[in-house]
Length: 214
Image (cartoon, rainbow, N blue to C red):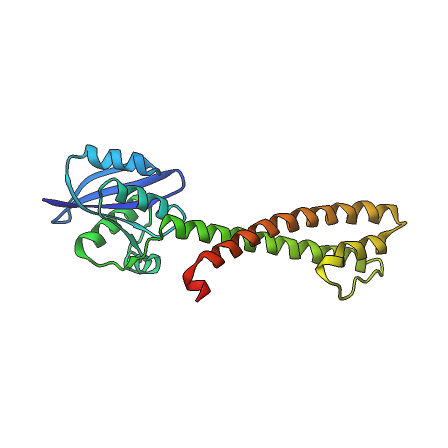
């Protein structure tokens, strides 16, 4: 008889519910949120698991890839669709969510989400890190301008390459401002160097990608 396993994934533990073809709960457990631990648990049940499902989320790509590599047909479920399907539950718990996901799998009432490849996840992490550092870099530059503005010192329109020299000229001879703004400038310089590394890595990927080059 076919069985269906629903996973409700949290950072530390995953609620697992296995139901049979009639919708009866066969197994329930809390398992470490790790693909190997989940594979061991599912194999230990000695049941014919037709499909394993989990919502798309922060750990889902990793767990999905591990379960698929372990031989399980695994699907990522679209989060909003799952939320709508389970909205009738008066009390929401991880255990109930796992049960609901298992039933959605059994009935086929779910919308699958594309699982990103490892290389696609790497590119996404590069883009995310680059954007994060760029944002912090701009925050620090705005912060420096704000500190100096309080003392009537206006940076004005300046190129990024001449920014640091302009700031040092403005605070020269003012010991406290040299200390305060000097630390902010040093932090900006470090962020700028790291941003440049990620930007070069991104450009290298673009040059090597036939789609981007076409």
